[in-house]
Image 1 (tube, rainbow, N blue to C red):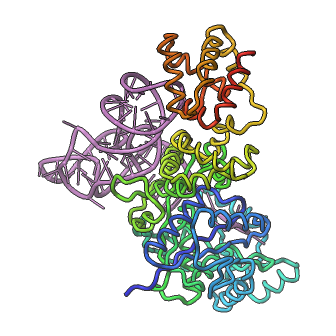
Image 2 (cartoon, rainbow, N blue to C red):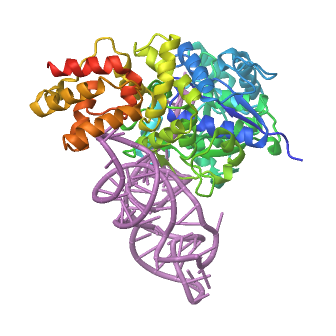
Length: 485
RNA sequence: GGCCCCGUCGUCUAGCGGCCUAGGACUCUGGCUUCUCAAGUCAGCUACGAGGGUUCGAAUCCCUUCGGGGCUACCA
């Protein structure tokens, strides 16, 4: 019986959570849910100059919005808290000092400029840059002398000779020779912990069993394992690692604003569904193994296994995300669609949220559902139904002001006037009979003119349905108005 | 420079020695449908980075090479 799985997502929020972070969080979450394990959320804010409360709150908010719920962490608590590293400083200090006592670590008095000089020399000599072990075995006198100079000391981990090997669930057996893993710093001169100390200590203390994280951390794994050893952890209790491939921008460079939007907040504003974002991101570096692509969060949990995760990096493709979002939107029920869309219409100042407005929006949704790829398009599509000061868009005005167009509008006005049953079917029947059959016009010409008069644009939802929604009175008024342009 | 990771259509991927004249999805191109825009539908384009092996047989195994990326901090 293997022990219960516990996976953690531990971002260092130095900005809004971005696509890469979220892909990692998603895999962490899906793995925890798939195995029936625990999903732990921890904030790595040891670099206090770069992590702010604002970013931390945004990260929490983003995860919640995406539906990636955690069992242990900020807000929900848990028996291994606190879950903000800034609140665990004394724990790290304890271990750093313990390591020094055990001789696994030592105080290093080298100054940054001295260290830089050493590295410079190593590079010049074509050697692997890294700490040269200068302070490894200082005598009491040397230490006293450094202290007398007023030098500060960092805590540095001693890397023994030999190497570290471990199994990466995605990449197989990994082996690192310690010749290329120099002694590393655990705590700054002011006593504050570094990532290498804090992650390892927390993962052990919080009983994390699986670490799925970005491949940028792959080469820091031997250092992390070194800390486990120093903590006295038995090898069979080490967490299992799986290093996820990167998500890169379309230009093959690191994802940034240049090659695709990185901030999840941006996608939220644009009107992407959390499930679409997660579905798309799940496909970046993972696949169910068959041809299925459109999956729900529930299905992701059922299907997700680390073994199916790819080892090669993936490029982010906005078009595919949009396609998936469009599919998800089309699959929404009208009530779900309505709930998503209302905030966008209100934010655009098209409606205030009154019941009659909502009723009209609801009637209009079926004709636009298959025409959008994100919710932010809804206000522009339904604008013609709600604007107070209706006006035809500038570039289309001349298309309704020529003689031919005026003839179409005049005839439409005349024949629409007596229509009593104002339904799209009746409207279409009348306009086809007069404009197409009698006047002999091509549909795209005839209806085009009416479309501009009614919706103000050459592009709109289906014309007759739009007219039905707008109502007879408003339609006739707009046609009349277009006639005098 | 050193160490490490990665390499199938434009993109995401399927593939784990014969089912591959390499499948799916997105994009793109063309057709159909059509009141615009979409959606839908049909078709097309296009890939195993290169070179050597191993094998009756290789996208799949091995080696070399080239290319991309990461790490090399008192960042994470």
